[in-house]
Amino acid sequence: MAKPCLLRQQTTWFRLILAVSFLVFTLVLMYLVFNTRYQFYGDGHQYRCLPVRFAVVDKWDKDVNLGDIYAFKAKNTMIYKDGTLLAKKFMATFLDTVAIEPDEYLYINGKQEAYGLKSATKLKLDKKRFVGKRILEKDEYFALGTTINSFDSRYFGTVYEDQIIGKLYPIF
Image 1 (cartoon, rainbow, N blue to C red):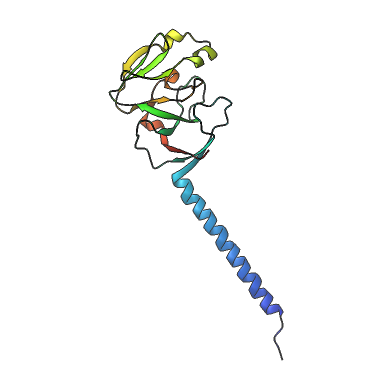
Image 2: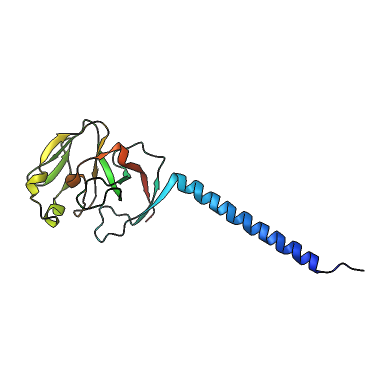
């Protein structure tokens, strides 16, 4: 006499539940491993400082190469709450000279890098407040946006090493 078909169905359901459980466990593990090293970054502002809407931040890559984009935590920025994730190009570091002239040109080591203090007008602050020259100290970085609307180190000062989250890789 043949065995009932019910036993085969239980084995199939058991295998299916086991396979789905393994798949869910694997996906959760992959997410946790990914999240340990990487973080997503999205810029939903109407006026962006960089031509990046969505990116991935490599939290293990904190070795700064000037000209690359890095994500960092805001600190004393006048606009953003401390800890807000920001992203800018790091353009100067230890012993570099940064100067903002009265004509609003920004120079790094004598080379013109940017123009304008548009955010000062938006904040209703006197542009003369931001004019000056200084040499960066150890563990300081001058962070610069790439658009005229950039709210960057011209306004909130330098970024310190302990604020850096990691290197930013644009996706689109």
